[in-house]
Image (cartoon, rainbow, N blue to C red):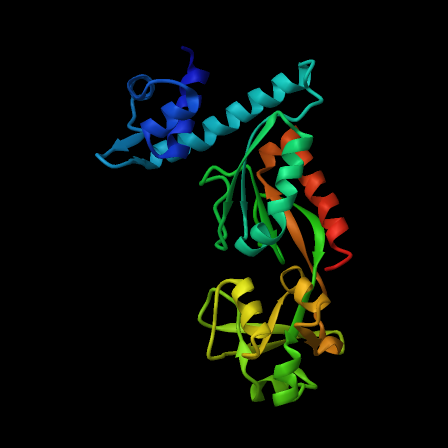
Length: 298
């Protein structure tokens, strides 16, 4: 086997965090995978992986080699596709990270349609509300909600993202409707966020207004916050795509619309060295088109 093959085996083992998982994915024996990675380490003169009885751990040098080797293999794949008779057709595996609520409420219908359209593509979808390290953790693309932090990643906005303040009609009948953001202090609130300190953003006279909030129930999942609001437990502030069905059927109504913040966006982000990837471009285009259709309700 050549160096590129050994690189591919090593990358697969890191992604699977086991020789057994890599062997199953590549259709090889566990012993062969272990032997090829040991040969690669011997040729490089460094330890790439630490073996334990339960799993693999990547050394610092192994992580550096993983990132560089993945870029090399991506470039080789792009070069092959560029001159191949199949070059116009997206193909290959796509590892995607997306937020939990967006994935369960939206990607569950989008991805089957995408895979039907592109039969030569496979997808590994992982839903997690934390901000993953795309390069370090081996993702090809990630969906991010809201403003993007400065980074070397390429970000493409695929849909606008509005935040709304909403509550059930039953709650508002019992407790009144807040007329200003400051009036929220007199209400039961349902914060959605990951940190201990949560604030909701509004706009007044063209300027942003941050309102610190707290409540009896704070969750890190938007669907749970929505369901609590539908149950009449209080007022919440969520992306429209999470609450759109409840707004359409009247289980929730919006408040403080006059103070709505400027819409942000839903982004697809990916490493700079993957910008020529046909499969990433196809996924971004497909998601953008699907979001445009769904956006009529968002």
